[in-house]
Length: 251
Length: 225
Image 1 (cartoon, chains in turn yellow, brown):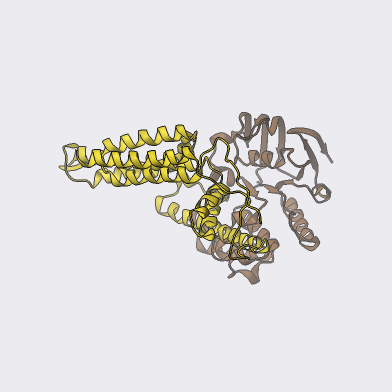
Image 2 (cartoon, rainbow over the protein chains, first blue to last red; image 1 turned 135 degrees about the vertical axis):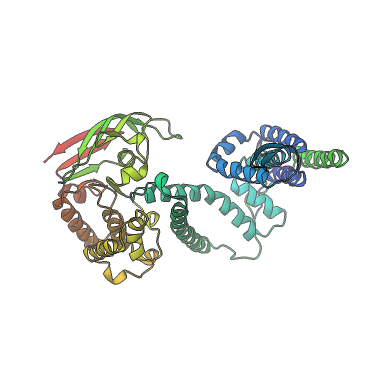
């Protein structure tokens, strides 16, 4: 079968983006203090702008989870001893400068991960699968990653629908005690798991019917090619990461 | 005394975020809580959107939806659910419990009803919807028709006075359709008001006392019998 090499237009190779995202995410995990994390966030935002990713939209979609970030930051600040106390009750420090710093670091780390991950959304799932496959990642694994990415928004919609449906049974969630409310949330898992299993079964049948894994060797109609500027992105991402690591490790 | 549910829509406009034109363009409609109202129209005419608007699932961009005189945007879904039941097109999204019996009981239990009372009501619903032999079964393993009956029973056990059914005949064979029609007739005679959204013109209009036809997000015809 003839292999057709397609230019990806003005877009970058997804592998170049993947390297950039991995570098940014790794830096966010390595550093603990707010200053380097703030710098990494600036780098992530600049990279997102360069790749024309809508990072603001990605962050907006996650606003429903903001309370989880806030709760994690609060718990972190609460259980961190040290630093000057900022808020104390009966001699017990509830908030300290060090706790606040750790909470800030957590928020910054999440933001870096969200903003850098939004860069991958600028490539189509098909391109990501092809990129991973050309990196010798087994096609089955690459395909699974692409399917997971594609189905995540559906899962979010289904969770929302299930929450709507359970309230329309006449449950006023806002006036139910927390313990019972958590029990109700556990009920929401049932339709979501059933839906995921159903979709997995249907998808498995559909791909088998199309001859998935029928042959050992795969050929691709569309093949990605790393160009000079893709290598430029990879080099810049690695060099900047090494530079940031070097600077802050010696400070 | 039976309290009649009235849903009143005034100049309701709604546009989905990714669409260029509003799906509902200034709907004025009052649906009273008795009899069966059929909502028909071609694909994309806004039937399901209008149904979701009436159940408070969607909020209008402009205009107002009032349920029994109260602005729906100021009511929680739980409050609306105690007055208006909504049967989604896809029953799987409305099943939550590990057994059929539990599916019917858990909301009443959370709302603090007495176990004796719950058992009585669950028994009645199981008999009424021919589900008694399935009481210990896992809801997701039921057939589509059985799931739909179970969801309908789970909604009705909370005694809403008005019911919105979105495409209730989808994937039902002739026999199941006849059973559903019988259930709806029983509800009608009990004074439960209903809005049936359906492509199945014959099913929706046969028992209807009012037929509303939507086209292009506007009321094209509103006929009372």
